[in-house]
Image (cartoon, rainbow, N blue to C red; front, side):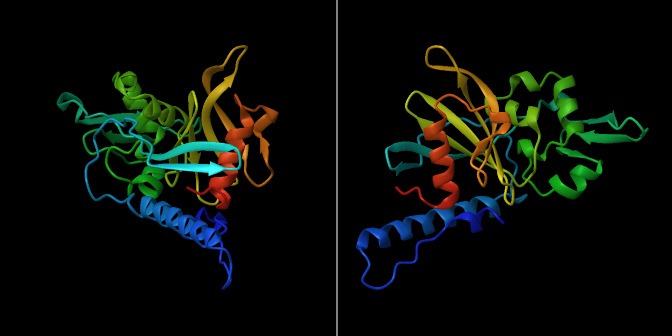
Length: 238
């Protein structure tokens, strides 16, 4: 089931309360926004810029849970002129002696993963980086200079169709990585600590089975779970 089809649009019958009609319109608006985000991931322009959090674009209320939500795009910083050249990277497969060519200036690689899955993402998008491009970014010292979200995405890798949402709760932020057609949602969230939120770690949540990966929830899992379920099932409303 695709990501957009998970939204349960409310279709009120004639005579229903206007509040329900308003909620249906807002859910449809959110669907359209997700659609625009996905279709915008085309190679239409160079996107060499650092991602920086901005003001929340939308505030949602779900029962007693309130949170602000905004889209995020992990992007690489500008590549220094002296590194806009090609690098040879050996295949990571043990039984392969292939060598691939990474061009940092063109943000490209000759490996099948890049050519089949990532080439159509905008230049500079972190998910355009296959593991060979990521290796060059690390070896040249560029990794440490990236912003926090981009470093996390480069570390984790992932499906090039993944979209990212920042969820602002009182006192902490959760980053969702949502891939169309996948039941699992990856998220970077604070871990549980003795006092308040702990360090940021990578967690997994299965939206269909309503469970955390390995039974390990993050800090304050109830509002996070409610936000994920609300956004993916269309129960969150502005």
